[in-house]
Image (tube, rainbow, N blue to C red):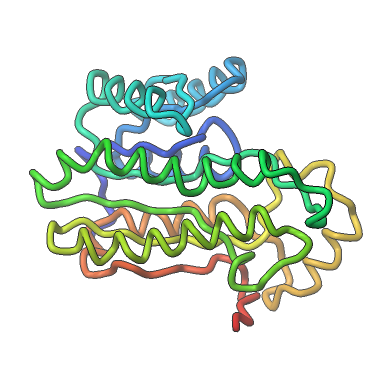
Length: 252
């Protein structure tokens, strides 16, 4: 069973920071070419680029909004030009995820969740399918979440959009299986990354107390699950969810 990704090109959306950066680093260290996709923060992207290059990863920074069709086309076209045809995609890009009651939300925020977790996976997948179908091999990995299965509240916008992403992934796994393209999901628990720095300490303490393994997960835990699903070792695995949450999986 090989976890070697040499000769493959992997797009991880939103990988200048957080989980995405770790996933890209892990795949790059297995031999994949991995661009840095970012939308706004050029300095952060430059730091990630330097980190990838220091690890010996073939890479390039590509600015693109992956919730827009033009942005996705630019990301994929530039990746193809600079690094080669895309074999692996990890749909990871996200935005702020505040906990709010239903009365506090506006539809515009719900729409932003749909754009990140349904529209973006649709646009990116549709754009890269030609090469994947031609070579009869491809990997589509959606970073979903335990929140849908655990019905986390008050968090309805994020939970609803993640539910849509999960349903879409399951359907796509059936549609694309005859072409040798797998579609799987990695569902992290709460993994503290940069955007969680200001979260309330009590919320963190309560969540940590619920984890059977009695430790926080880290981005590398998520990255290794993604590497397995991207590798030849997972050739016969599709439509599945790997929960990376230390056993905190009392799903109904």
